[in-house]
Image 1 (cartoon, rainbow over the protein chains, first blue to last red):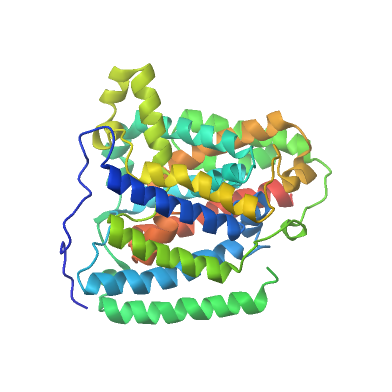
Image 2 (cartoon, helix red, strand yellow):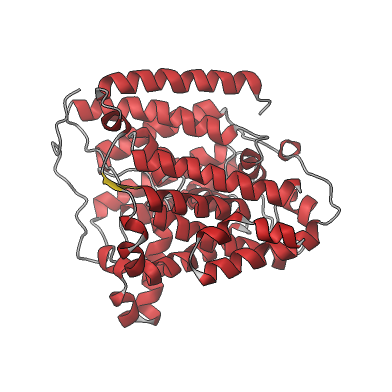
Length: 197
Length: 211
């Protein structure tokens, strides 16, 4: 698959003003409304559904995420192939990804909501999400306090830069996308077959 | 009880004394609250209103649209960092301006900020139209395990939120930014992070609800 690179004008440079342009914010509001609506209908604003996934009892979260990945991946890579969208790749920093990931997971289990689903939970009247959201704000500040030190240490460990799975495995992107979509679909079929929820 | 507190995994992994203390303290009141309470099953409580496959596919399509129309991936956790930055600018402007994270990411009402703010509204619309508006301070499954103390829930959720935000910033994203947007772009960082989200999450959830 060709890589058109930055075929679409980038809009990611940090704007100097305090508020981004109105049309862009309007689009964000419409998409946010849709995302929150879908997550609530998917049951992932509910404490027991999210904790149920971590207890390996309720597989709703995995089913939603894997389906979103398959559908999203095919569309985004197709659009990228025809130079209609940019990819937004975060750099791989193995140490930070692993340590941060484990801490995130531990916090997720204690709160029972992740950042996006806490917003959904608040919307559906699960007021305990407010405690988690207050913690999220405080934790963001704690990270910022330590960010200088973290940049000099943890974020240096295993810094691979922006890298995709197909690049790492030296497989053409198009081939990988098709193969991976099939593999994840098989996984979804197995989940449906062997889980009660 | 001590062995359980010692086994708590997050504390060992962070060189930050503050997070260590929070992590260790978090489990002690939980041990007390849950002592002798039988295991609870999440499937005894309501699940999703719509098929998870339908919702997942729709979120996949939504990600095409955000990439195409907004040139943005779906994400959630930096919303909370923006709020922290705004509060910081209000309370301690010079300190805030001196921090590396806020130098690289100046607080701004941007696309993702509005996106997450309206996620709250979207959740409200879905719950109200589906007859699922909870209006409760404690999730029923939590109450079955840990009792009806809102203070206990507040302390644990607040501490967990601190860990979660710290982890998200360190890992570079959360279950949305890495878990959906990053994974669907086949980003190596995101697949590592998501696997670790679930390892950490499963470990602590099992400690909380299965012991």
